[in-house]
Image 1: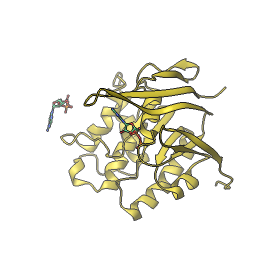
Image 2: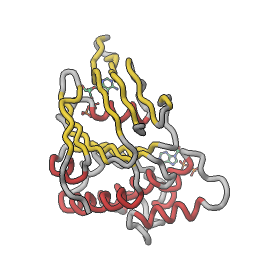
Image 3: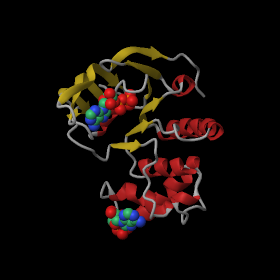
Length: 229
Ligand code: ADP
Ligand code: ADP
């Protein structure tokens, strides 16, 4: 049984200014197995973010359904975490407190194990020593490492990444792509990873889901045949 099941999913937005509706995605079907790394590729505006936001529980389906582990998605939950392109860190909080926020959102601060979990997540993304730094003191790549640590700290089964390396410079991007690949392999998480980079889609994805526009829909699904370490 798939971990994520998407059935005939359509999302329409009401465009407030004009009173029209806009079909962001239409008729999307996808099954994702536990442990799979799915990359999502497609032109701007084809509905990739909308698709991911429905799985995250941040946008409701207009028609169709999404289930995780057989249960309908009705909102955000501790089994899913999101990594955003613009990092979305809290600027007035340190690295440690930003990662701690990942537990707070999931009401995970009970007991006394939480400090260790925050520290462990910070170590996993290679930011030991930067616990007391503020986001503005860090490079883009380091800020996204904080975003990654915040996402994994509550140990979600599913990581939803919306162009996580889109705002990172080219060299750092390549390094982080490899780091993310290792981190995911080590933790066995199920991943949906939106990207504009064909290279990233091929190197990271077990399957590449290619979207088309007008309306947004899956154009094809490509099984990669690369041998993985
Ligand atoms: P992508 O991530 O592939 O760029 P999006 O899911 O962000 O695509 O957007 C798909 C379409 O839906 C676009 O035409 C976009 O303008 C529109 N859209 C996205 N979010 C909203 C919203 N909250 N209200 C109205 N239209 C939206
Ligand atoms: P806590 O004080 O419990 O650690 P936060 O640091 O998130 O929680 O701050 C509580 C609230 O105060 C935030 O949700 C935010 O709305 C507001 N806030 C605090 N500092 C700032 C800031 N520098 N800029 C904008 N809003 C802030």
